[in-house]
Image (cartoon, rainbow, N blue to C red; front, side, top):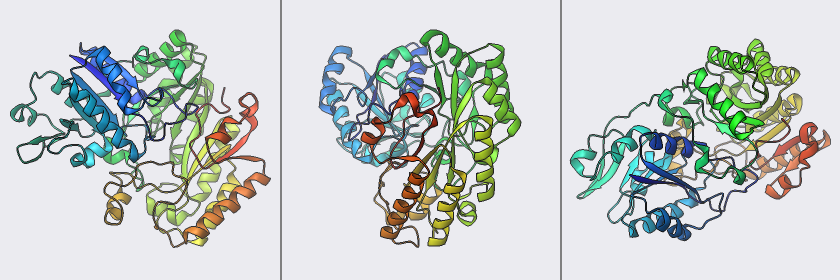
Length: 460
């Protein structure tokens, strides 16, 4: 079959200075390509294409199936972008293409896409590979055949039908993503990879365990083969592990690092990891292998709040890990959710004190977003829109979940930013501020941000 994979346009478009290749979509498309289907990838966000402009691509390729993963792995799309998904689906239907949607909203609220007259035939819950493979093997999508595929939803007669079960995909069956499916010149000069899925940490604000399940990783040899290809075929100087928790299996990371060293791959590496998994011996080996940047989700400076949300670390350990990681030679980014439930003025002050005391190289201040599938979403579901905004980069509080008035919360954040400014931090409030950074000398710059930060700041 001819299958078009579409990364829909964000609303507003995501800044080009932030965008890495849509590795989740590329991975899915490459798997389907490996099965023998003819695939094409259209990244409408980076191309700044409006939904109504998709017809040109549709007419050129004439796909039989259009696949739209929305809020799948990389959470950059705003909820307002859903209207664009429908416009793309409507255009595809004019050419009689079948349309299916995956991702978090499709998983938890399939009724947003599946209803009488909708241009979307099928939604896929959770991981998309198995269901997509089965769907593409069928000539007709009829009730009897669809009902046998786990984890999908579709309209039948007078209601939505949702098939039971969920297929857990073996990640070692995935090919190395075919990055020739996009123009890498459209993206920032950091290549990305996904070496694992899921997380077993169970933090209450996080959607990853509910959506992807427990942590699973690709074999070390496969991971290093992909890094080697990026270095040797694409001239990659920086490669980012976009896994939610790259250090969950320490022995696996040790093997990855040893293979990189054995193969003498010259590349700077970055990753995201949990603070409680810090191991000095492994971190030093990672540095030897080329790791230079890491993102820790610190979230709060209050040990009480940390315990409440399920973080397996206390405030003193956070400060200690950040300092040890910097001492090894890593550039450290930390993220902090400043309005977690139960936050009081005291715990907010504790967060301020810890941020000032630990002084990570990059500080990202967040307001809480209720992510579908998270425990906090389930707790607050009756008090928010259905579904709530899934955008994690909002610049103001989304709900009143703390004992601190929102105006006071904002005032305290502004006061913290002023203190960080006195310590030499550069404030990034929006993408215009980010564009002003002198990238040639930003390795020594400290940054505090209220908006998304690019992944190529100061580590190679």
